[in-house]
Length: 372
Image (cartoon, rainbow, N blue to C red):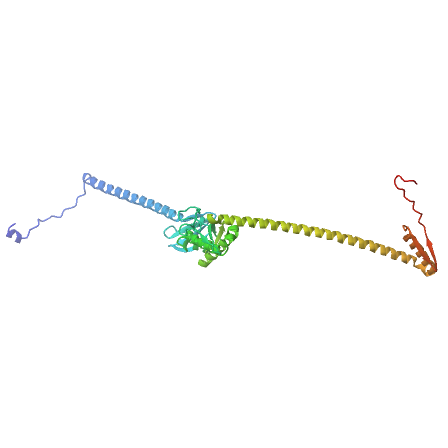
């Protein structure tokens, strides 16, 4: 472009005002079609978006229901549940349907309250270093043989086993069981080991060997005491089976001999007690017989005295009328009763002695073969 052309302003051609013409039908049809198509597309897009929003809302409602429903948990019987919120203990739940906010807000931890563990075993004083039963050996090896020491300085092999269950009525016990210890089984096993050593050291070897039930009771008391000492909230029901007690094989004959003597002593003692009881019963029976005889004699005497008293009472009037005659009659009756079975009778009456001889002469006995 030249400089003149740049300097000379362009003169716009005069535009005559013209009257806008109405489009002909042939010119109007394409524009209407475009508008109709745009409206249809807009409506279709709006309807699609509305449908999508409805689907999204339905999906959100379903997800919300599923999310809230996932917090419903059923706690079975013989089971307790701990309600945690952001990892912090809130409460202990009873068996049945419970609800909590789903994870990670809330968490339901179920705990079996019965038969929690059936294999808490203490065998440190029983098994060998090779996990075997006590072995027969000529010499004792402390680094190899498992053993406990009794109160009298002897060696024993003791194996104890216990089961436990939680006290369902104590919510704090369930909480303490779950969160109070990193390994509750190891804790209880160490307590059981300690109780075995303690109970063994508190009695003689022969007592522990012959009375395993009493040894088991002592172990159980020690376990319960140690649990209370370490945790007051951990309430457990302990069930301890009768411990297995063995003596070293090399000294077992001596224990067997002692047990044999002890059994014989107990048998003799039982026999002596039975004899004493029998003698006592016989003496009581004889005493009853004697007492009964005395009571019978007393009753007879009492009856006789009462009869005589009654007879004397009846004869009193006759005595009062003629005492001398009454006395003579009594003497006669008495003499007749006394002399009934008498053989020789010597009777002195008044001042003149008289002898009554009522015995007939005895016939002389003839010797065998002799003449009469």
